[in-house]
Image (cartoon, rainbow, N blue to C red):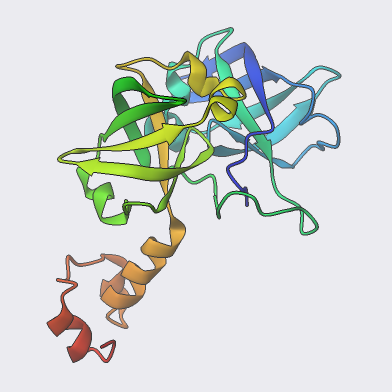
Length: 221
């Protein structure tokens, strides 16, 4: 589990591809402090496992499902990536619960200034993600814990303070670029519980109408 507080920005050193499988070599310093083989590392918000560790870099496997579902397939040698080690039980929980399980990608539709902040407008590729995107709720963009500032039509926006922009790879993102999106896990669990039917059919979550009548009928209101 992660918090969405990026520890450092690393750089892609090597990319080894075999079809849709990849091995990424990533430079870093802070995350290498106590990193061990088998440890989890968030790379642009994707939970990956360290398979080799050097003095100035480490390597991770990327499986085909991750390749297809995230923006890691767009990385090139020299690309900057957000890095965070898995949180420890004794650490401060400064962000929100982040699993590193990306729900989908989004396209940056606009980058504008708002006094001391920079606003990123994002359009999710999968519009069904909007049921988990709550105004003033938590969301993870490329591994960064952020707050939804606006919801307009088919896009949402997050407002970035100067410190976050300067300390993350988001500073290099421009209109048209792709970002990884992980929605707040709490909404997903609530939906699963409300739609559960108590049989194997529950594995195919139905589009149940979450209305006041539905909640009352099932003992939730």
